[in-house]
Length: 145
Figure 1 (cartoon, rainbow, N blue to C red):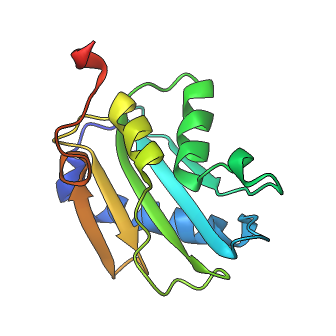
Figure 2 (cartoon, rainbow, N blue to C red):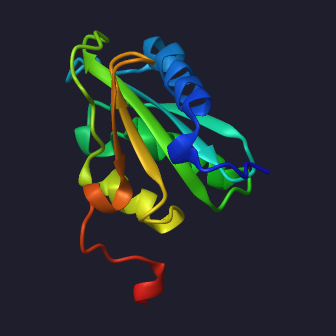
């Protein structure tokens, strides 16, 4: 069980970013050439990774963040604490890669909007950190139903 405040755990942030960077070469983006990898930390302490996978029918593409989160859910996870994202054109980490709207909404379903963090990283030392609430203000979540 992960019981630290992720917002203060620099070691875990670094590990998440490193795991995302490690998976970036596995991204499959032959159409957009925009490669993305993500690492998601859940309250069990487990880290799940994912990459974007494109299809010739671009509507069938899956983002790295949702790929990692859905894998975790399939393994029984329910509470998302943090996601690190790396990406760029042809796998070059030249910019901060932020989650799309669909990924933000999936994160909202499994993460606490004030405590969950998203790390958009170039390197383990060069990243932007936001809470989910900052990225998805006035959100609609499970408690809204």
